[in-house]
Length: 154
Image (cartoon, rainbow, N blue to C red; front, side, top):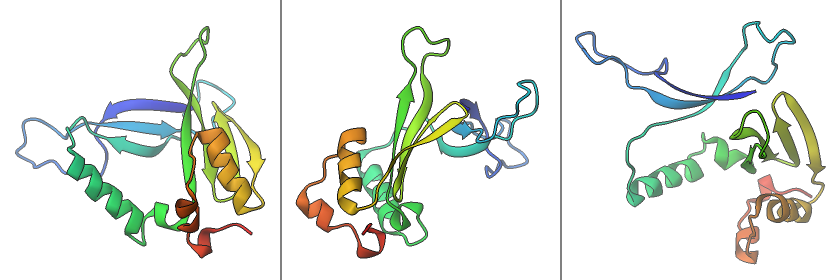
């Protein structure tokens, strides 16, 4: 299950004398193990938060530089790509209904609570092919050569 909520997050600091309250962020949450009883409490995990603050090109350059170079960043340690899946016309809930994610060597599709491995990549060529066919990401030879050896498949 997925949800999008506009709410403050726990890490936000609000001064005691504030009359406004904590700022609200848009939070994308996932429930990886929904209970069988739909009325039961769900265990939601926040995957991503974002603001409505306007960002300029130089802001994106800095954010991209940090996430692509910092050794503590998830994105410098693993090959990953995610594409959101939209509901089709006629669905009760139109909008995002799930995602397709490449993580390391596996491509998984998650629709609601159902997660399926749709491709296991055994080689780097298979993974590059999955990026192109499933995600529409076509790497140049220079980009392929730039994948660090410790993240390459056989």
